[in-house]
Image (cartoon, rainbow, N blue to C red; front, side):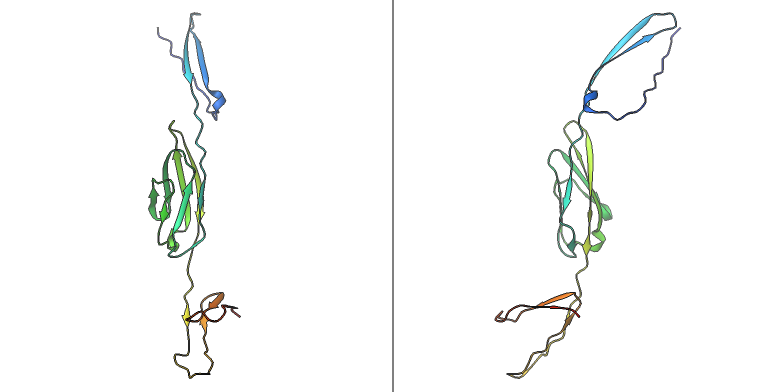
Length: 167
């Protein structure tokens, strides 16, 4: 008669210190025993972090970066994927805002992830209403709207830059 032994092992978080040799001794109903040994190596998870040049403006590049040390798999909004360690996404749109996650897999086959939020801001719509023609000695009236601060320069950059706050 074969005796089947079912051993239920409770799941627990493994640590590097849990590496080693494990032996199980099984005793049958007749009092006879047998044992088996297994060696376990618990590999550490890769240390992964991510960074980004966020916030960026529409049309700018999004530069995602991660720590070195393995194979990379990036995911993000709108089906973005990349296997490059430090991908650059050119011509950003507001639809590219959101959470980007990099998963790094080390040489032992262990994986770890890091996520970072990206914000892509709209650029202001600028309108300018200048006098198109004035006589010498008259003032030039320039107006603009669409932003929160303004900086005007002349064509030859002879006059100081003016920064005027909208009011």
